[in-house]
Image 1: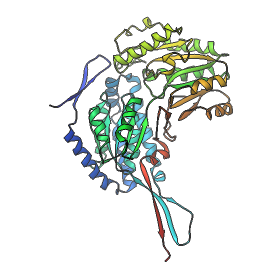
Image 2: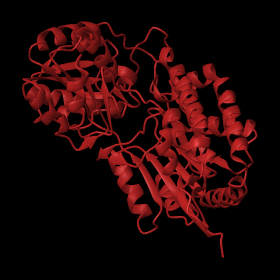
Image 3: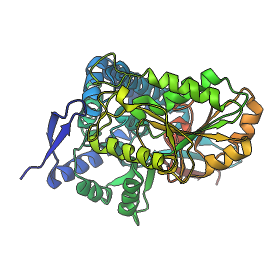
Image 4: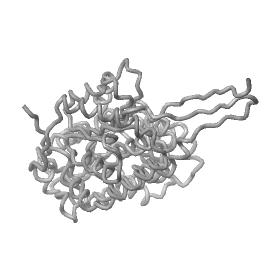
Amino acid sequence: MTKLLQVVSPIDGSVYVERELATHQVILAAVSKADEAQRVWRNTPLGERIAIGRRAIEQFSAKEAELAEELCWMMGRPIRYAAGEIRGVVERASYMADIAEQALADIHLPDKPGFTRFIRREPLGVALVIAPWNYPYLTAINAVMPALLSGNAVLLKHSAQTPLCAERLVAAFASAGLPDGVFQFLHMSHGETEQLIQSPAIKHVAFTGSVPGGAMVERAAAGRFISVGLELGGKDPAYVRADADVAQAVDACMDGAFFNSGQSCCGIERLYVHQDIYDDFVEQAVALVKGYRLGRSDDPESTLGPLVRPEAADFVRHQISDAIAQGAIAHIDATDFPLDRPGSAYLAPQILTEVHHGMRVMVEESFGPVIGIQKVSGDAEALELMNDSDFGLTAALFSRDTQAALALADQIEAGTVFLNRCDYLDPALAWTGIKNSGRGCTLSGIGYEHLTRPKSFHFKTQL
């Protein structure tokens, strides 16, 4: 019997879309097709691959309004912001196309009489990209675009919450002239996904999701000696030094904490503020957040939408109530946000003070609209608290002293350290994490290294 995937919209609890889950036979056929297509695609000139990739992004971008509306209904991002993700895809994919020739060029060594020596980057084969629902297009394109340009075939498995995203990306590349079989989507169960990772045809897995999900990928790939990229989220900190521009830091930190209703792996989830400016910072932050509007995602006036599902909102509610029971002070009155009620996906934003690392909200990933603000005496205490985490994706510093910030950044355990900004991916920089935030890299020239293998050529030319 065919199994159905149902997308329940967080806007109103209605079933937004239904799709059949791929059977085992369909999955095997897709893998075989990808393997066959890749053997031809890898020999397609790089310039032609780049041209197809650029046309695909043009096709994708042309449907911005339609894609944004679907995104709004599938995962709850306010419609006023949804199109920003489409534009982000264009930025990242275009940059990876811009640098492809340089990143994939042969590495020539200094002349050695009588020999020709160089290193070539070869595609791995078939890559499986597993993407989440919170930034479904951006997280997917990080791996999809460079994988295809490198000469790999790609199978894309999207979250059950955002299946249309996989379909739309594949359709854009198909309309751009990508050969059949090089890029396919599969709507699969968790069990079938795990089995697919074990397929001999899969040579790379790029996974974005939870820590337990990443552990599943590693278990499934164990003993196969394939490359695995894992981006597993975080509990990202920010530190506002005494010399920071307070108003600018408040704007950036609150946006970093509450954008997408806090459902961002690199969003700000814990905040440390120097004691000299602490009261001023908290006062401005509370005033700003009280002005947010929680509403339906399809309402252009909404600045906060629902969380992806009621269970996710209740998880954050429990974190908040636990913290308050331990002495935290809540600064936002939830009754000012009428849609917030127990069991609902709609959750009011919350700012907590008098917090510490004995509270779940300061150490456990929240993935929701809550931020704890802790007072610190200076750089040393802030650094200790920032590094006191099982995660290490990004961290942010706010200061007018660039050199002091650089000295601190060198000691922060994170894949990316920001100064006077947060929650942003520059495609020219390596996107990577440490600790339970994962391993591997996407974006930048280094990202291409994880989707190719080096092959050395050592020719003796004088006999």
